[in-house]
Each structure stands twice: as C-alpha cells, then as structure tokens.
Amino acid sequence: MPAWLKTALNIVLAGLLLLLALFIIDHVSDYVLRGLAFIIPLIIPFLVAIFISLLLEPMIAVLQTHARMGRGASVALSMLLLFSFLVQL
Image (cartoon, rainbow, N blue to C red; front, side, top):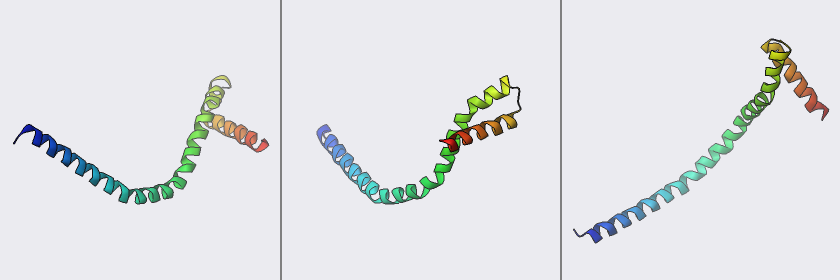
C-alpha cells in the first residue's frame, strides 16, 4: 500500500473519530450539566467554610502566639469577632 494512501486513510479515520467524539459529547453534555446543577448547591456551604477558615487562620495564629490562648479559645474569639463584624455591616 502506498504511503499517500496510508496517510489519507489515517486522516479519514481521525475525522471519523472526531465526529464520533463530538457526537458523544453532544449527547452526554446534557447529563453533565444536570449533574452540575444538582451538585453545585451541595458544594457551596463547603466552599464558604473553607473561605472562612482561610480568613480566620492568621487571626487565630496571632491569638495563639501573642495572647497565649489555646486553639479552641482562639477559634471561638476569632469567629465571634468575624460574625459580629459581619452583623454590624
């Protein structure tokens, strides 16, 4: 078989595989979007909790080192200060 024919068959095969992949993605995308629409509201509270913990960690570290408070007391005071600040706004 000549080299040009192998190349042509490879190009045709690649095109057919691309069409098959696009067909599968087109039919599966509806299910993926439905799944994401279901999962995102479940993930949001965890993302908010991670954001709050990242926000509080420097304050907790300062209270632990400079005020010589325990970790639990530092966390409680930091959360109290953060939430009182947010309520004040």
